[in-house]
Image 1 (cartoon, rainbow, N blue to C red):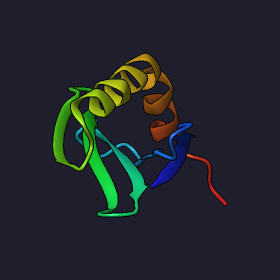
Image 2: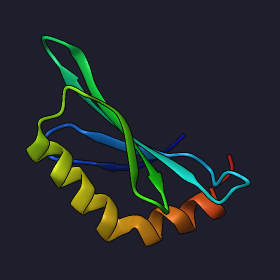
Image 3: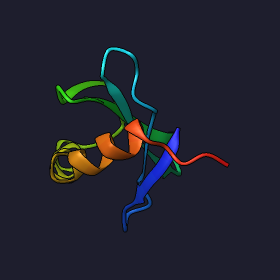
Length: 84
């Protein structure tokens, strides 16, 4: 997974390399004092959400907006990830 963005509330957004089927896994995770972590997965380019845990609907909506507005960058980075 490659780091992409850290939101002001501590939510980290990371992404995978592009899979052979053209999909990219985008994973969001936010530390939480009670539950340890809240997390969610979104698969691009279809914007399919799964495994949403702990995030409120407003938080999911915010992440959705951010991913939709930056999906072209995520897909580009996932196609040509930086190597160490």
